[in-house]
Image (cartoon, rainbow, N blue to C red):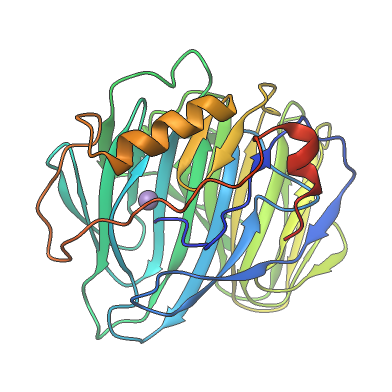
Length: 319
Ligand code: MN
């Protein structure tokens, strides 16, 4: 997925110190071609990141033709996580990867120093519905060579009235084989019917729970679909009550200590680094090799803002 905002917000991510809070999404247009809206809950004005999770788009269900048509665009300094509840998307990238993803599977693209990719929804008989996330790479790993991985054998298990699909990290004695570079967890939790559960948490982690569907309370708080409920470090358990069938995404991780600069589809550490990344994409440098896909073309980077990307200024930008 590419950030399609005309004036992408500059995001500085200082360590957060918040209590438990529910974050409402804001609506963002997914692509100029497809015109569907997505609900973005990270980065949020109040909570920039949860662990190393720094971007969360939630979209669909939609039966619109070409719902996902995102032409070639670059990434740096991050991992992209694609996860579907329904539908089918073809991923292609500058490593030569061509991979269709289906519900319950994980496409994990590690940009490292740089990669370009495109995404196209395929099966118009089925609604497109899912989430797209980004994970910041720590400084020690962000200059690595890019890697693309597809996982279709992730742990799926029952926990009380729920079915858990573990995308990333460890949960309830299960472990995902997906490679990440900081301490993280990501899982889909689906209630088949009314019920409650007490989910043990890692006290070192902060968490966010995105409600996809259903009537759900988290630690006694009603959290509407589309919203992300944040839990700070130190909680031992999450109480979930579902009035019927429901689905949610659990995200967590150790608070990410490094300050980052996130602009458009790039993550760096300084203004000048972002400028250089942008120029390399615009100039079609060898960092971002061309590749063939059914969409054709490439998405140009927006113009840089007329300010240096610095923390004080960034926090004043209003979205
Ligand atoms: Mn992308």
